[in-house]
Amino acid sequence: MPDFIALAAILGLGMLIWDCIEVGRNDAANLVNAVFGARVMSRRNAVMLAGVAVILGAAMSSPVMETARKGIFDPTVLTVGMALAIYISVYFVDTLLLYGFSGFGMPVSTTACLVFELVGAAWFLAGWQNVNGDKVQKVILAIVMSIAISCIASFLIMRIFRGAIRDHARDRRAVILHGPWIAGAVLTGLTWFMVFKGLKNVPAIKELKSATFGEYGEGLMLLAMWAGFTLITHLLLTITHRKWCRHLFSVTAVLGMICMAFAFGQNDLANAASPGLASLNLWQHGDGFDSLANIASKVPIPMWALVGCGVLMASGMFTKYAQRVTRAEVNTASQYDQVALYAPRWCKALARMILPASWQRNVLSPPPSVTEDQKKIHYDTLRATVITAVSASVIAFASGRGLPVSTTYVAFAAVIGTGLSDRAFARGDSDTKIGRAIWVVTCWFIAPVIAMLATGIVATTVYNLGITGLCVCMVGNIGLRLLLKRRADRHEAAHHPGTDGDASTPGTTA
Image 1 (cartoon, one colour):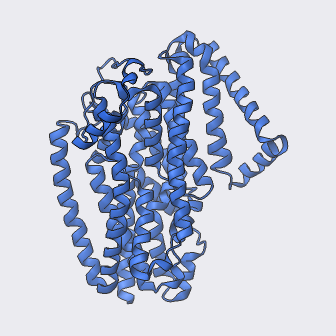
Image 2 (cartoon, one colour; image 1 turned 90 degrees about the horizontal axis):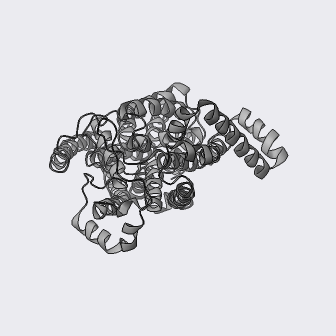
Protein backbone atom coordinates (compact mmCIF):
# COMPACT_ATOMS: atom_id res chain seq x y z
CA MET A 1 0.00 0.00 0.00
CA PRO A 2 2.75 2.59 0.75
CA ASP A 3 4.27 2.02 -2.71
CA PHE A 4 0.84 2.43 -4.33
CA ILE A 5 0.18 5.66 -2.38
CA ALA A 6 3.53 7.16 -3.36
CA LEU A 7 3.21 6.17 -7.04
CA ALA A 8 -0.39 7.37 -7.26
CA ALA A 9 0.50 10.73 -5.65
CA ILE A 10 3.45 11.27 -7.99
CA LEU A 11 1.37 10.26 -10.99
CA GLY A 12 -1.43 12.54 -9.78
CA LEU A 13 0.91 15.53 -9.68
CA GLY A 14 2.15 14.78 -13.17
CA MET A 15 -1.37 14.45 -14.52
CA LEU A 16 -2.39 17.63 -12.70
CA ILE A 17 0.00 19.45 -15.04
CA TRP A 18 -1.44 17.56 -17.99
CA ASP A 19 -5.04 18.29 -17.00
CA CYS A 20 -4.40 22.00 -16.46
CA ILE A 21 -3.14 22.21 -20.04
CA GLU A 22 -6.20 20.31 -21.32
CA VAL A 23 -8.53 22.67 -19.45
CA GLY A 24 -6.74 25.59 -21.10
CA ARG A 25 -6.91 23.87 -24.46
CA ASN A 26 -10.71 23.55 -24.38
CA ASP A 27 -12.40 25.69 -21.73
CA ALA A 28 -10.01 28.64 -21.72
CA ALA A 29 -10.11 28.85 -25.52
CA ASN A 30 -13.61 30.29 -25.16
CA LEU A 31 -12.27 33.37 -23.38
CA VAL A 32 -10.97 35.02 -26.55
CA ASN A 33 -13.72 34.02 -28.96
CA ALA A 34 -15.71 37.27 -28.91
CA VAL A 35 -12.70 39.61 -29.13
CA PHE A 36 -11.08 37.51 -31.86
CA GLY A 37 -14.36 37.05 -33.75
CA ALA A 38 -14.84 40.83 -33.82
CA ARG A 39 -11.22 41.25 -35.01
CA VAL A 40 -10.49 43.59 -32.13
CA MET A 41 -7.23 41.75 -31.49
CA SER A 42 -5.32 38.90 -33.08
CA ARG A 43 -5.88 35.58 -31.37
CA ARG A 44 -2.27 35.44 -30.20
CA ASN A 45 -2.41 38.86 -28.52
CA ALA A 46 -5.84 38.13 -27.02
CA VAL A 47 -4.57 34.84 -25.59
CA MET A 48 -1.54 36.53 -24.00
CA LEU A 49 -3.71 39.21 -22.38
CA ALA A 50 -6.34 36.72 -21.22
CA GLY A 51 -3.61 34.39 -19.96
CA VAL A 52 -2.32 37.03 -17.54
CA ALA A 53 -5.87 37.53 -16.21
CA VAL A 54 -6.31 33.76 -15.82
CA ILE A 55 -3.16 33.56 -13.71
CA LEU A 56 -4.31 36.43 -11.48
CA GLY A 57 -7.75 34.86 -11.07
CA ALA A 58 -6.22 31.48 -10.26
CA ALA A 59 -4.59 32.98 -7.19
CA MET A 60 -8.07 33.64 -5.75
CA SER A 61 -9.79 30.33 -6.46
CA SER A 62 -9.93 28.80 -2.97
CA PRO A 63 -13.73 28.92 -2.32
CA VAL A 64 -14.44 26.93 -5.48
CA MET A 65 -11.50 24.62 -4.75
CA GLU A 66 -13.17 23.50 -1.54
CA THR A 67 -16.45 22.68 -3.33
CA ALA A 68 -14.75 20.59 -5.98
CA ARG A 69 -12.24 18.89 -3.69
CA LYS A 70 -14.47 17.56 -0.93
CA GLY A 71 -18.05 18.57 -1.67
CA ILE A 72 -19.10 15.87 -4.14
CA PHE A 73 -18.47 12.93 -1.78
CA ASP A 74 -17.27 12.36 1.77
CA PRO A 75 -13.66 11.09 1.73
CA THR A 76 -13.71 10.25 5.45
CA VAL A 77 -15.83 7.11 4.82
CA LEU A 78 -13.29 5.75 2.32
CA THR A 79 -10.03 3.94 2.71
CA VAL A 80 -6.90 5.72 1.56
CA GLY A 81 -6.67 3.36 -1.43
CA MET A 82 -10.24 4.16 -2.46
CA ALA A 83 -9.70 7.91 -2.19
CA LEU A 84 -6.51 7.79 -4.27
CA ALA A 85 -8.15 5.55 -6.86
CA ILE A 86 -10.98 8.08 -7.22
CA TYR A 87 -8.70 11.10 -7.56
CA ILE A 88 -6.29 9.51 -10.02
CA SER A 89 -9.09 7.99 -12.15
CA VAL A 90 -10.55 11.47 -12.61
CA TYR A 91 -7.34 12.49 -14.34
CA PHE A 92 -7.14 9.40 -16.52
CA VAL A 93 -10.58 10.13 -17.93
CA ASP A 94 -10.56 13.94 -17.86
CA THR A 95 -7.33 14.38 -19.83
CA LEU A 96 -8.53 11.97 -22.50
CA LEU A 97 -12.06 13.36 -22.72
CA LEU A 98 -10.96 16.99 -23.01
CA TYR A 99 -8.25 16.13 -25.53
CA GLY A 100 -10.70 14.25 -27.74
CA PHE A 101 -13.33 16.98 -27.76
CA SER A 102 -10.71 19.68 -28.36
CA GLY A 103 -9.33 17.77 -31.34
CA PHE A 104 -12.75 17.89 -33.02
CA GLY A 105 -13.20 21.57 -32.13
CA MET A 106 -16.00 20.82 -29.67
CA PRO A 107 -16.33 23.04 -26.57
CA VAL A 108 -17.17 20.86 -23.58
CA SER A 109 -17.58 21.68 -19.91
CA THR A 110 -14.65 20.70 -17.72
CA THR A 111 -16.83 21.48 -14.70
CA ALA A 112 -19.59 19.07 -15.70
CA CYS A 113 -17.01 16.41 -16.59
CA LEU A 114 -15.26 16.79 -13.21
CA VAL A 115 -18.48 16.57 -11.21
CA PHE A 116 -19.69 13.44 -12.98
CA GLU A 117 -16.23 11.86 -12.90
CA LEU A 118 -16.15 12.21 -9.13
CA VAL A 119 -19.72 10.92 -8.90
CA GLY A 120 -18.96 7.89 -11.09
CA ALA A 121 -15.79 6.93 -9.24
CA ALA A 122 -17.35 7.32 -5.78
CA TRP A 123 -20.47 5.42 -6.88
CA PHE A 124 -18.57 2.44 -8.31
CA LEU A 125 -16.18 2.13 -5.36
CA ALA A 126 -18.27 3.04 -2.32
CA GLY A 127 -21.88 2.88 -3.42
CA TRP A 128 -24.38 5.62 -4.16
CA GLN A 129 -24.83 6.41 -0.46
CA ASN A 130 -21.35 7.96 -0.39
CA VAL A 131 -22.26 10.50 -3.07
CA ASN A 132 -23.39 13.85 -1.69
CA GLY A 133 -26.59 14.06 -3.70
CA ASP A 134 -27.55 17.47 -2.35
CA LYS A 135 -24.21 18.99 -3.33
CA VAL A 136 -24.29 17.38 -6.77
CA GLN A 137 -27.82 18.69 -7.34
CA LYS A 138 -26.73 22.13 -6.21
CA VAL A 139 -23.80 22.18 -8.64
CA ILE A 140 -25.90 20.85 -11.53
CA LEU A 141 -28.62 23.40 -10.79
CA ALA A 142 -25.99 26.15 -10.76
CA ILE A 143 -24.69 25.00 -14.15
CA VAL A 144 -28.20 24.84 -15.68
CA MET A 145 -29.22 28.20 -14.18
CA SER A 146 -26.00 29.83 -15.38
CA ILE A 147 -26.73 28.68 -18.94
CA ALA A 148 -30.28 30.01 -18.81
CA ILE A 149 -29.29 33.30 -17.21
CA SER A 150 -26.42 33.85 -19.64
CA CYS A 151 -28.57 33.12 -22.70
CA ILE A 152 -31.60 35.16 -21.59
CA ALA A 153 -29.58 38.10 -20.25
CA SER A 154 -27.41 38.31 -23.37
CA PHE A 155 -30.52 38.11 -25.59
CA LEU A 156 -32.34 40.93 -23.76
CA ILE A 157 -29.29 43.17 -23.34
CA MET A 158 -28.29 42.67 -26.96
CA ARG A 159 -31.79 43.58 -28.15
CA ILE A 160 -31.76 46.82 -26.10
CA PHE A 161 -28.28 47.82 -27.21
CA ARG A 162 -28.91 46.87 -30.84
CA GLY A 163 -32.13 48.88 -30.88
CA ALA A 164 -30.10 51.94 -29.91
CA ILE A 165 -26.93 51.47 -31.96
CA ARG A 166 -28.23 49.38 -34.90
CA ASP A 167 -25.21 48.56 -37.07
CA HIS A 168 -23.37 51.81 -36.33
CA ALA A 169 -21.03 50.62 -33.57
CA ARG A 170 -18.23 52.77 -35.04
CA ASP A 171 -20.28 55.72 -36.24
CA ARG A 172 -19.39 58.91 -34.34
CA ARG A 173 -22.90 60.33 -34.12
CA ALA A 174 -24.48 57.07 -32.90
CA VAL A 175 -21.70 56.40 -30.41
CA ILE A 176 -21.74 59.93 -29.00
CA LEU A 177 -25.51 59.63 -28.48
CA HIS A 178 -25.75 56.08 -27.06
CA GLY A 179 -22.19 55.00 -26.30
CA PRO A 180 -21.86 56.62 -22.85
CA TRP A 181 -24.93 55.04 -21.26
CA ILE A 182 -24.23 51.65 -22.87
CA ALA A 183 -20.59 51.66 -21.75
CA GLY A 184 -21.70 52.94 -18.33
CA ALA A 185 -24.12 50.02 -17.96
CA VAL A 186 -21.46 47.51 -19.02
CA LEU A 187 -18.82 48.90 -16.66
CA THR A 188 -21.32 49.07 -13.79
CA GLY A 189 -22.29 45.43 -14.30
CA LEU A 190 -18.67 44.28 -14.50
CA THR A 191 -17.72 46.25 -11.38
CA TRP A 192 -20.69 44.94 -9.39
CA PHE A 193 -20.33 41.29 -10.28
CA MET A 194 -16.54 41.08 -10.60
CA VAL A 195 -15.56 43.18 -7.59
CA PHE A 196 -18.42 43.26 -5.13
CA LYS A 197 -19.74 39.73 -5.85
CA GLY A 198 -16.77 37.78 -7.18
CA LEU A 199 -14.28 39.19 -4.65
CA LYS A 200 -16.66 39.61 -1.74
CA ASN A 201 -14.42 37.50 0.54
CA VAL A 202 -11.46 39.88 0.18
CA PRO A 203 -11.29 41.99 3.40
CA ALA A 204 -10.72 45.32 1.62
CA ILE A 205 -13.63 44.70 -0.76
CA LYS A 206 -15.84 43.63 2.13
CA GLU A 207 -15.11 46.87 3.98
CA LEU A 208 -15.66 48.99 0.88
CA LYS A 209 -18.97 47.29 0.16
CA SER A 210 -20.13 47.80 3.74
CA ALA A 211 -19.22 51.48 3.64
CA THR A 212 -20.98 52.13 0.33
CA PHE A 213 -23.68 49.62 -0.60
CA GLY A 214 -24.37 48.75 3.03
CA GLU A 215 -24.72 52.42 3.98
CA TYR A 216 -26.69 53.80 1.02
CA GLY A 217 -28.38 50.73 -0.48
CA GLU A 218 -27.65 48.72 -3.61
CA GLY A 219 -30.11 50.50 -5.87
CA LEU A 220 -28.80 53.99 -5.19
CA MET A 221 -25.14 52.96 -5.42
CA LEU A 222 -25.62 51.11 -8.70
CA LEU A 223 -27.41 54.12 -10.14
CA ALA A 224 -24.59 56.38 -8.95
CA MET A 225 -21.98 54.06 -10.47
CA TRP A 226 -23.83 54.02 -13.79
CA ALA A 227 -24.11 57.81 -13.80
CA GLY A 228 -20.41 58.15 -12.99
CA PHE A 229 -19.23 55.75 -15.67
CA THR A 230 -21.60 57.35 -18.19
CA LEU A 231 -20.25 60.85 -17.45
CA ILE A 232 -16.62 59.74 -17.67
CA THR A 233 -17.25 57.96 -20.98
CA HIS A 234 -19.06 61.00 -22.41
CA LEU A 235 -16.18 63.29 -21.45
CA LEU A 236 -13.63 60.96 -23.03
CA LEU A 237 -15.65 60.73 -26.24
CA THR A 238 -16.08 64.50 -26.37
CA ILE A 239 -12.41 65.22 -25.76
CA THR A 240 -10.94 62.60 -28.10
CA HIS A 241 -13.49 63.06 -30.91
CA ARG A 242 -13.38 60.35 -33.57
CA LYS A 243 -10.63 58.16 -32.13
CA TRP A 244 -12.50 56.95 -29.03
CA CYS A 245 -15.80 56.82 -30.89
CA ARG A 246 -14.43 54.24 -33.30
CA HIS A 247 -12.90 52.12 -30.56
CA LEU A 248 -15.26 52.51 -27.59
CA PHE A 249 -16.90 49.12 -27.89
CA SER A 250 -13.57 47.50 -28.78
CA VAL A 251 -12.25 48.72 -25.43
CA THR A 252 -15.32 47.48 -23.52
CA ALA A 253 -15.08 44.11 -25.28
CA VAL A 254 -11.43 43.73 -24.22
CA LEU A 255 -12.25 44.78 -20.65
CA GLY A 256 -15.02 42.17 -20.61
CA MET A 257 -12.58 39.52 -21.87
CA ILE A 258 -10.09 40.38 -19.12
CA CYS A 259 -12.81 40.13 -16.46
CA MET A 260 -14.05 36.87 -17.96
CA ALA A 261 -10.52 35.41 -17.94
CA PHE A 262 -10.04 36.50 -14.31
CA ALA A 263 -13.34 34.86 -13.33
CA PHE A 264 -12.34 31.73 -15.26
CA GLY A 265 -9.09 31.49 -13.31
CA GLN A 266 -11.06 31.75 -10.06
CA ASN A 267 -13.60 29.11 -11.01
CA ASP A 268 -12.11 26.52 -13.35
CA LEU A 269 -8.76 26.06 -11.65
CA ALA A 270 -10.53 23.74 -9.21
CA ASN A 271 -11.44 21.38 -12.05
CA ALA A 272 -7.83 20.58 -12.80
CA ALA A 273 -6.07 21.13 -9.49
CA SER A 274 -8.28 19.70 -6.74
CA PRO A 275 -7.81 15.93 -7.39
CA GLY A 276 -4.04 16.27 -7.65
CA LEU A 277 -3.72 18.45 -4.56
CA ALA A 278 -5.96 16.05 -2.62
CA SER A 279 -3.71 13.14 -3.65
CA LEU A 280 -0.65 15.09 -2.54
CA ASN A 281 -2.24 15.73 0.87
CA LEU A 282 -2.91 12.02 1.29
CA TRP A 283 0.72 11.23 0.56
CA GLN A 284 2.09 13.98 2.84
CA HIS A 285 -0.07 13.22 5.88
CA GLY A 286 0.22 9.45 5.96
CA ASP A 287 -2.38 6.71 6.06
CA GLY A 288 -5.65 6.34 7.89
CA PHE A 289 -8.54 8.45 8.96
CA ASP A 290 -6.45 11.52 9.89
CA SER A 291 -5.24 12.08 6.34
CA LEU A 292 -8.74 11.59 4.93
CA ALA A 293 -10.17 14.02 7.45
CA ASN A 294 -7.46 16.44 6.42
CA ILE A 295 -8.68 16.28 2.82
CA ALA A 296 -12.19 17.09 4.01
CA SER A 297 -10.99 20.12 5.96
CA LYS A 298 -9.87 23.45 4.60
CA VAL A 299 -6.20 22.77 3.92
CA PRO A 300 -4.37 25.98 2.88
CA ILE A 301 -3.15 25.85 -0.72
CA PRO A 302 0.17 27.61 -1.41
CA MET A 303 -0.01 30.67 -3.65
CA TRP A 304 2.74 29.32 -5.87
CA ALA A 305 0.68 26.19 -6.57
CA LEU A 306 -2.35 28.25 -7.59
CA VAL A 307 -0.29 30.55 -9.80
CA GLY A 308 1.54 27.58 -11.33
CA CYS A 309 -1.74 25.92 -12.28
CA GLY A 310 -2.90 29.21 -13.78
CA VAL A 311 0.23 29.40 -15.92
CA LEU A 312 -0.37 25.85 -17.17
CA MET A 313 -3.97 26.61 -18.09
CA ALA A 314 -2.90 29.77 -19.92
CA SER A 315 -0.28 27.77 -21.87
CA GLY A 316 -2.98 25.41 -23.14
CA MET A 317 -4.68 28.33 -24.88
CA PHE A 318 -1.79 28.62 -27.35
CA THR A 319 -2.11 25.07 -28.72
CA LYS A 320 -3.37 24.01 -32.13
CA TYR A 321 -6.42 22.24 -30.71
CA ALA A 322 -7.40 25.38 -28.78
CA GLN A 323 -7.47 27.22 -32.11
CA ARG A 324 -9.91 24.62 -33.43
CA VAL A 325 -12.25 25.21 -30.48
CA THR A 326 -12.06 28.98 -30.98
CA ARG A 327 -12.73 28.80 -34.71
CA ALA A 328 -15.71 26.46 -34.36
CA GLU A 329 -17.46 28.53 -31.69
CA VAL A 330 -16.83 31.81 -33.51
CA ASN A 331 -18.34 30.39 -36.69
CA THR A 332 -21.37 28.85 -34.96
CA ALA A 333 -23.18 32.17 -34.43
CA SER A 334 -21.32 34.24 -37.00
CA GLN A 335 -23.07 37.15 -38.71
CA TYR A 336 -21.18 36.16 -41.85
CA ASP A 337 -23.05 34.18 -44.52
CA GLN A 338 -20.69 31.30 -45.35
CA VAL A 339 -18.84 29.54 -42.54
CA ALA A 340 -16.67 26.44 -42.30
CA LEU A 341 -18.39 24.16 -39.81
CA TYR A 342 -19.25 20.51 -39.37
CA ALA A 343 -22.66 19.37 -38.18
CA PRO A 344 -24.26 15.91 -38.56
CA ARG A 345 -27.00 15.60 -41.16
CA TRP A 346 -29.73 15.02 -38.59
CA CYS A 347 -28.73 18.25 -36.82
CA LYS A 348 -28.99 20.20 -40.07
CA ALA A 349 -32.37 18.64 -40.85
CA LEU A 350 -33.65 19.54 -37.40
CA ALA A 351 -32.29 23.07 -37.84
CA ARG A 352 -34.23 23.55 -41.08
CA MET A 353 -37.39 22.46 -39.30
CA ILE A 354 -37.10 24.95 -36.43
CA LEU A 355 -35.73 28.01 -38.30
CA PRO A 356 -38.53 30.61 -38.59
CA ALA A 357 -38.96 31.86 -42.14
CA SER A 358 -39.60 35.41 -40.90
CA TRP A 359 -36.05 35.68 -39.57
CA GLN A 360 -34.61 35.88 -43.05
CA ARG A 361 -36.53 39.12 -43.64
CA ASN A 362 -35.65 40.73 -40.33
CA VAL A 363 -31.94 40.22 -39.68
CA LEU A 364 -30.68 42.78 -37.16
CA SER A 365 -26.95 42.05 -37.19
CA PRO A 366 -24.65 44.17 -39.38
CA PRO A 367 -24.13 43.01 -42.97
CA PRO A 368 -21.17 40.69 -43.68
CA SER A 369 -17.87 42.52 -43.90
CA VAL A 370 -14.14 41.94 -43.87
CA THR A 371 -11.11 43.73 -42.46
CA GLU A 372 -8.55 45.56 -44.55
CA ASP A 373 -6.52 42.35 -44.86
CA GLN A 374 -9.63 40.38 -45.92
CA LYS A 375 -10.39 38.58 -42.66
CA LYS A 376 -14.05 37.87 -42.00
CA ILE A 377 -15.67 39.87 -39.18
CA HIS A 378 -17.95 37.41 -37.36
CA TYR A 379 -19.25 39.76 -34.65
CA ASP A 380 -19.36 43.52 -34.41
CA THR A 381 -17.74 45.11 -31.37
CA LEU A 382 -21.08 45.83 -29.68
CA ARG A 383 -22.00 42.14 -29.73
CA ALA A 384 -18.52 41.16 -28.54
CA THR A 385 -18.98 43.53 -25.59
CA VAL A 386 -22.27 41.92 -24.57
CA ILE A 387 -20.86 38.38 -24.87
CA THR A 388 -17.82 39.05 -22.68
CA ALA A 389 -19.60 41.26 -20.15
CA VAL A 390 -22.49 38.87 -19.52
CA SER A 391 -20.20 35.81 -19.38
CA ALA A 392 -17.78 37.47 -16.96
CA SER A 393 -20.60 38.62 -14.67
CA VAL A 394 -22.26 35.20 -14.46
CA ILE A 395 -18.98 33.35 -13.80
CA ALA A 396 -17.78 35.89 -11.22
CA PHE A 397 -21.08 35.75 -9.35
CA ALA A 398 -20.90 31.93 -9.19
CA SER A 399 -17.26 32.04 -8.05
CA GLY A 400 -18.17 34.40 -5.24
CA ARG A 401 -20.72 31.87 -4.01
CA GLY A 402 -18.22 28.99 -4.25
CA LEU A 403 -20.08 27.26 -7.10
CA PRO A 404 -18.05 25.70 -9.95
CA VAL A 405 -20.00 26.64 -13.10
CA SER A 406 -18.98 25.99 -16.69
CA THR A 407 -17.16 28.76 -18.54
CA THR A 408 -17.82 26.88 -21.78
CA TYR A 409 -21.56 26.68 -21.23
CA VAL A 410 -21.85 30.30 -20.08
CA ALA A 411 -19.79 31.69 -22.96
CA PHE A 412 -21.51 29.53 -25.58
CA ALA A 413 -24.93 30.50 -24.20
CA ALA A 414 -24.00 34.19 -24.49
CA VAL A 415 -22.89 33.68 -28.08
CA ILE A 416 -26.14 31.90 -28.91
CA GLY A 417 -28.25 34.46 -27.01
CA THR A 418 -26.73 37.43 -28.85
CA GLY A 419 -26.98 35.53 -32.14
CA LEU A 420 -30.68 34.87 -31.57
CA SER A 421 -31.22 38.53 -30.68
CA ASP A 422 -29.46 39.68 -33.87
CA ARG A 423 -31.03 36.81 -35.86
CA ALA A 424 -27.57 36.01 -37.17
CA PHE A 425 -28.59 32.38 -37.67
CA ALA A 426 -30.88 33.37 -40.55
CA ARG A 427 -28.03 34.33 -42.85
CA GLY A 428 -26.30 32.11 -45.37
CA ASP A 429 -25.44 28.69 -43.93
CA SER A 430 -28.22 28.97 -41.35
CA ASP A 431 -28.87 25.21 -41.17
CA THR A 432 -25.16 24.56 -40.59
CA LYS A 433 -24.91 27.19 -37.83
CA ILE A 434 -27.99 26.00 -35.96
CA GLY A 435 -27.08 22.37 -36.65
CA ARG A 436 -23.66 22.89 -35.09
CA ALA A 437 -25.27 24.50 -32.04
CA ILE A 438 -27.60 21.50 -31.70
CA TRP A 439 -24.63 19.13 -32.01
CA VAL A 440 -22.65 21.00 -29.36
CA VAL A 441 -25.56 20.94 -26.89
CA THR A 442 -26.11 17.23 -27.63
CA CYS A 443 -22.47 16.55 -26.75
CA TRP A 444 -22.99 18.44 -23.50
CA PHE A 445 -25.37 15.67 -22.45
CA ILE A 446 -23.21 12.86 -23.84
CA ALA A 447 -19.94 13.95 -22.17
CA PRO A 448 -21.12 13.69 -18.51
CA VAL A 449 -22.50 10.19 -19.11
CA ILE A 450 -19.21 9.06 -20.64
CA ALA A 451 -17.30 10.75 -17.82
CA MET A 452 -19.32 9.06 -15.07
CA LEU A 453 -19.22 5.52 -16.48
CA ALA A 454 -15.63 5.63 -17.70
CA THR A 455 -14.28 7.01 -14.42
CA GLY A 456 -16.20 4.41 -12.45
CA ILE A 457 -14.63 1.61 -14.50
CA VAL A 458 -11.15 3.13 -14.29
CA ALA A 459 -11.42 3.68 -10.51
CA THR A 460 -12.49 0.06 -10.00
CA THR A 461 -9.53 -1.14 -12.10
CA VAL A 462 -7.02 1.02 -10.24
CA TYR A 463 -8.34 0.07 -6.80
CA ASN A 464 -8.47 -3.69 -7.46
CA LEU A 465 -5.18 -4.00 -9.37
CA GLY A 466 -3.11 -1.39 -7.51
CA ILE A 467 0.14 -0.49 -9.25
CA THR A 468 -0.71 -2.80 -12.15
CA GLY A 469 -4.01 -0.98 -12.55
CA LEU A 470 -2.22 2.35 -12.69
CA CYS A 471 0.06 1.07 -15.44
CA VAL A 472 -2.82 -0.46 -17.44
CA CYS A 473 -4.88 2.75 -17.26
CA MET A 474 -1.90 4.93 -18.18
CA VAL A 475 -1.14 2.80 -21.26
CA GLY A 476 -4.82 2.84 -22.20
CA ASN A 477 -4.96 6.63 -21.85
CA ILE A 478 -1.95 7.16 -24.11
CA GLY A 479 -3.17 4.61 -26.68
CA LEU A 480 -6.65 6.12 -26.92
CA ARG A 481 -5.11 9.58 -27.08
CA LEU A 482 -3.09 8.62 -30.16
CA LEU A 483 -6.17 7.07 -31.76
CA LEU A 484 -8.25 10.20 -31.11
CA LYS A 485 -5.48 12.39 -32.51
CA ARG A 486 -5.41 10.51 -35.80
CA ARG A 487 -9.18 10.60 -36.17
CA ALA A 488 -9.44 14.27 -35.18
CA ASP A 489 -6.67 15.29 -37.60
CA ARG A 490 -8.38 13.40 -40.44
CA HIS A 491 -11.67 15.11 -39.56
CA GLU A 492 -9.93 18.50 -39.58
CA ALA A 493 -8.27 17.85 -42.94
CA ALA A 494 -11.62 16.80 -44.45
CA HIS A 495 -13.75 19.68 -43.18
CA HIS A 496 -11.24 22.50 -42.56
CA PRO A 497 -8.25 21.99 -44.90
CA GLY A 498 -5.32 24.31 -44.30
CA THR A 499 -6.65 25.81 -41.04
CA ASP A 500 -4.30 24.39 -38.42
CA GLY A 501 -1.87 27.24 -38.51
CA ASP A 502 -2.03 30.36 -36.42
CA ALA A 503 -5.69 31.27 -36.26
CA SER A 504 -4.84 34.93 -36.46
CA THR A 505 -3.47 34.66 -40.00
CA PRO A 506 -5.62 35.26 -43.09
CA GLY A 507 -7.72 32.34 -44.17
CA THR A 508 -7.41 30.30 -41.03
CA THR A 509 -10.82 31.18 -39.65
CA ALA A 510 -13.37 30.74 -42.36
